[in-house]
Image (cartoon, rainbow, N blue to C red; front, top):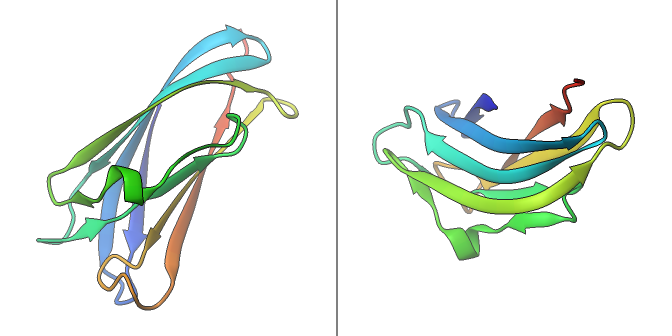
Length: 123
């Protein structure tokens, strides 16, 4: 599954990313989140983000920027998750949270956070 997100800095410049997740269907109520890939998709020249990722419903899986580094113009990062995620209610598998400091000035003007909702497909 691929989702496009545009992170904005405090000046309104966009840092678009492409977030691709790989899932394996396990049952009508669970799936395995296998991997997450974040790919830069047209950053301003020399622009970087420092993403923290968190998926609460995958046994609190997280990847912090201190361990995985930054994503700059032309970069991508792959994260191996390999966690089974169970439906909470209805078809809701949970959310992936992406949080990064302000891209143009990491020490200023607050962090940016984005949430991507995942649902299980019924067979």
